[in-house]
Length: 242
Length: 350
Image (cartoon, rainbow over all chains, first blue to last red; front, side, top):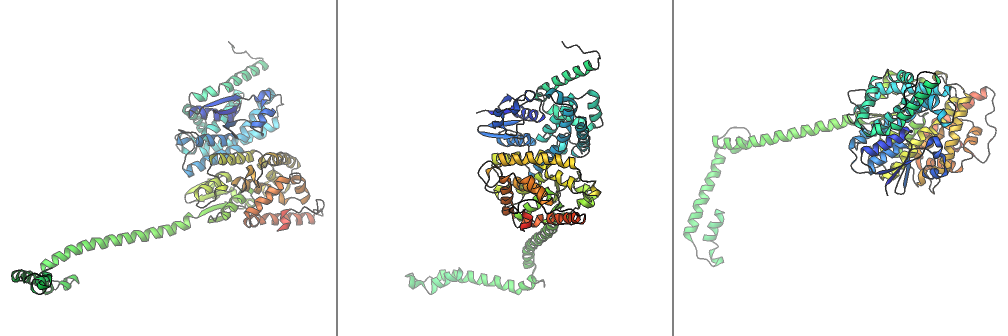
């Protein structure tokens, strides 16, 4: 029975899991669960993940949710996954756990609500929330600073001074990619001060090419649509949509 | 050997029905005589003198010197080997002190308590380095060297530094010998389920008791004031999380999360978080936890499995609660009303 990955490619952690599978030749069936259509809230999906969140996997009869737990499971359970993704060495592995845990309470706590409360909410029929956005922005800017000065300290191309990507790089970069749907000026204001972060995003993208771009196409399409709407609302000239 | 030849050919021959062999005996005598001369030579040349460093014949000296040289080398090797052994022993002893695990801790912090209890339960030798959050010691440059995120807990194991309590618990479970498998199973699927709870915890339960506590108990130096809105937000997360623990994480038969009959690091981490509610009024605590019978039983199961260390490490919460109640009494508030007489929180049972 082939691995099933329940995913919406608009979801940052879903993308991380899918890219990981593709990079490592893990055979899987992608089952699309559209958040914008409320499909994650159905009783059918609750059977897969009672927390009603994405991603989730079913491997034979084994069900699992939470993307970091999934990435670790896949790295350990499937053959041929290169060591750099989730090293066998206990100390190196622990440092990756440390980043992944930090991510939950920091980058993810900042980036996701910021994007939601400034941009995505109306698409899901919810109002924008400037106060929540402001709180999230504080956490986001602090997290980007810490990435720049702590996690990317040293000469490595990836987090923790690594020269090859780990599951932590994949998870965190997919999170930051969500900022693509923001207004261009907003995105530049948040990311421009952080040169190492920008280079690291590029390094991760290159290391996981061509899958990275292919999996992010959905996001880029959403970005285009949102940009179009902004220009329309501002009564500015619209780009050709051929 | 020559003595045997002489005796056989002179004395014992008839016993073995052999004729006396005078020629054989004479040959033996010649050999014996030569051997005895050799011995004389050695003694005449003060063999022992040479051996004791008092001079002697050149031949003997040379041969003894050769064997001395060999002996010398051997002695040198033994000495070197002993030196190395001594150095290694000294290094190990010095490293033992330096290499002793350090746990940077403030027991008012929920994840700190989880790490300390885990160490005590598993006989992991450690030095608890107190970092008082209420005195802002976690914000000093010295502590930033340990954890640049300025949070607790953190550990230093030899030259290895680590922060984030779940990462620490996993590291300790994997690095120290003799830790029972149930804390962090080797089985990939069981382990993954534990990761799943721990990750869920970050975004759910962790945003409950801690937030309620921080926004109920004022700590001016940390900028903490009574903030009813934040408390309400914390209570929302807490209720939703406790509901999920009751209905999902504790749904299977078993005393612990995920249907386990023995605790894992997930049980320890989550229960320590919920324990923060013990500092509140009993009425509030009962209101928040009362609806969740499985959760209450699970807390008690984890406490029993982790005692006496669980109670000892949580004593700091008793003191914090007493201090708070005294302060409120001074302000004239009545903190002892309400709640069921049958249901006593664990703190009063110690």
